[in-house]
Length: 102
Image 1 (cartoon, rainbow, N blue to C red):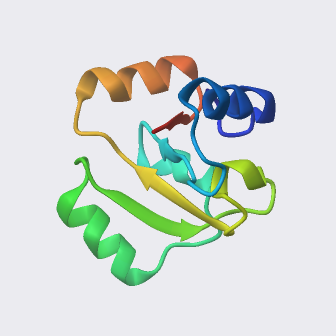
Image 2: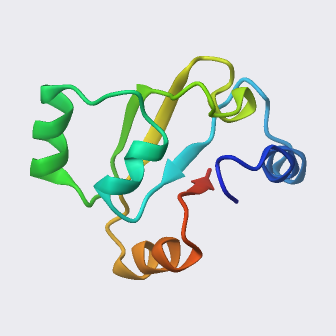
């Protein structure tokens, strides 16, 4: 579900019986999609991204204010992953927005 769809995010929590204190991560199809989600990227984050992504590695950033609190568990932080799977990245690109994951 889109990380901006509060109703959809609530449904994920209800279906999975997930505690609201556990944030969801967000999958992106490219580094460019991160701009919709994060305030900024440090030089250290850029080094990690350039060296390791795409990979099964989630990086934590300060979330933009428009990101729903339920997604971040009211932490103001957001976990972002650029998946290693080309198929998954293609799906996210086709959908046209980042997707939440657990």
